[in-house]
Figure 1 (cartoon, rainbow, N blue to C red):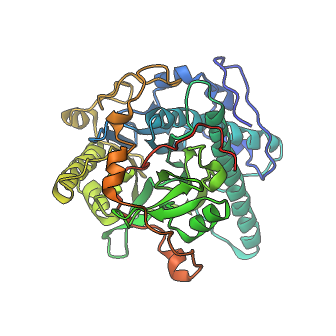
Figure 2 (cartoon, one colour):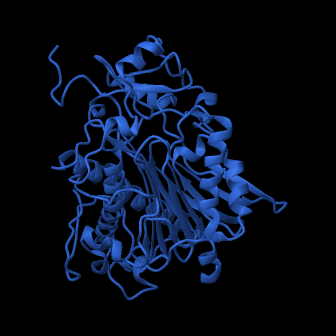
Length: 464
């Protein structure tokens, strides 16, 4: 179910797929490269010139992360241009939580794009020789072609939806069986997208968010939220968790933050409804199934911002669009946005520990500043993969630098729990009203840890 990874450029990778697929010409029309060119070892990923994962820029994007005051930076990010073909770009932001959250986020950052490539390649292979063309650009029905265009769009959506769903499922399965990475009470969010021409495909879990800056009819910049913050108080999320015997309620000292709890223990108190890892809650309603969406981009759409909740906790969508659009250079936009979030943390919540922040700014026209302008901002180039966030050397298998619970503050002590008082009652049952369904978790502010405390048991469930 996962992808095969080989160090040989001649290797191939296939995976079963039952959905609709895209013609090979859709992915290879603009390039002579084949999918086998992308089958590489995870250890070789840092050497790819079109892939950046530390503070820097690419041809059409810039990324920046800054450690908060809770310990090691648990955020990860990536921009991968020429993703399967020259007109494809993959972007992602991953926010880890729990004692090994930083390792989970980095593992997902490295492995998830390759899994997505694998399932896309599987779909492509099944259409080999079909002669069908792919859906590109905006649909412009003309006379009797309306049904044909609609069918092509449906097939394209089906192909990408299936690829995202299978990639996320395979990623979570790999984490569960990883021999050196304990994901029982650690996990990560994910907000990922692939831009191909004017098509935008998105898959996401957790509370990291993507928005778009676009011009309205008056040429004024407006913010368009592209994803939903998948928190436990969303009616459909709360209903699923309760069906699975999980509990959803908030602490008395933070009534605005509903959390997911085990049925037999006031732990771990996860502040999101979907995540990679967190296997202590996977039987109780927390899932890794991504939400998927497809959007047609227009000439009015200017840029996309992906960020962890360290940014959204203190800045609104409109404020983020204003900051990015007014940056002196495009290559400085992500750094300026993180700096703005850091200032807001100090001004709005001086007694709170600032959260980690990670930002990806993707400019939809594919243009970036000149190298001289970029160097004036003090960044590294895209081919320099140094770690500017001050983190220890990254380890995929978790064997280096064991994390400290006291350092990243993901767990409250028993004294803190006693001081904070008892837990509040269960939140009211979810309703299916239009108002509840449409609020979509927009502009949510938490300013809290993703986890409250670890369960008082190991992976063996207590007998009833």
